[in-house]
Length: 401
Image 1 (spheres, rainbow, N blue to C red):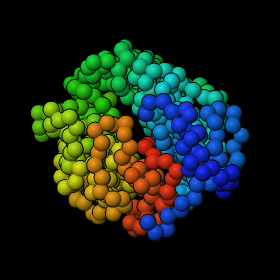
Image 2 (image 1 turned 90 degrees about the horizontal axis):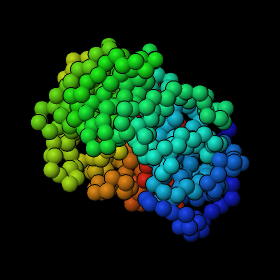
Image 3 (image 1 turned 90 degrees about the vertical axis):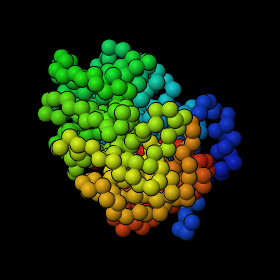
């Protein structure tokens, strides 16, 4: 890819005024540059250049695109509302969940494309086995695409599956063409089913109350979270792995092809307005056993990640990134990255967020408008930047899946 090309300078004051017009719902070595090209919300904006391994961070009313090595702010795209971002699965694109559906952002080229997947409440985006599955909560529709086809600039041909009822769900297509997707309604979620390439149902399990989230481990073992453990799909069969507590919710998970063990959160208080857990779950997909590890610090749903060798990574509210051996549950090291913080009650409010790509952990620090890059193995902070606005979600391109 070419090196990023700077455009005209946009001051923080001017940017704030511009953003306010379109808003709707929702240390040492710091690079304080705010050089950026501001682009209106149009898929036809002409990019000033290409960004190397871009990162994308959301702020209240738009998106920042940054160079993945230097963290230099390359572009600002105004986009009203509460937006979410996920890797599309290739070198160039990021999927943006907007109020009207999924939109495809050419992060390398710094512009929104014409490719959209309309629908109310766009939710989970899952990359696996060279395919990317989009789940639209408001319709129950699943769209599966090959991210390599996004480079053509037009909507790629893909697979569409519609759930029996709309719900907050998730789907993943396996390497053999099987599609695992959740079961539920607007008020109750119960489990998951699997269909073959022709959408014929081949497996079902409804012993997973409150099903939420997914992750894939080595040998294509896939788990979805439940309010009492996880539901594992492996070798064509479902297996329930129970939590040690009657209520043991695992709603967010992170997997790695380098490990048979999945990393999950763990909450055990069903009556809490917001439980700030200190324990994580490690789910061994080979033995179908679940281990809990107390980290001595709380974390949020945006705190989980996996390292290049399968390390389990958790960003704690003590400001440290904990590197954990998933096989033993032992914390191998703690890397101080940001100041101590507390998870807000509203899940849409900003909090420090972890995004991992290859050997680098990217961590946002909204309270200081900062973003940091950390080498996972050395623990060295390799870059930092101060941005015009506090950021919320953090993602980027990721062709490694």
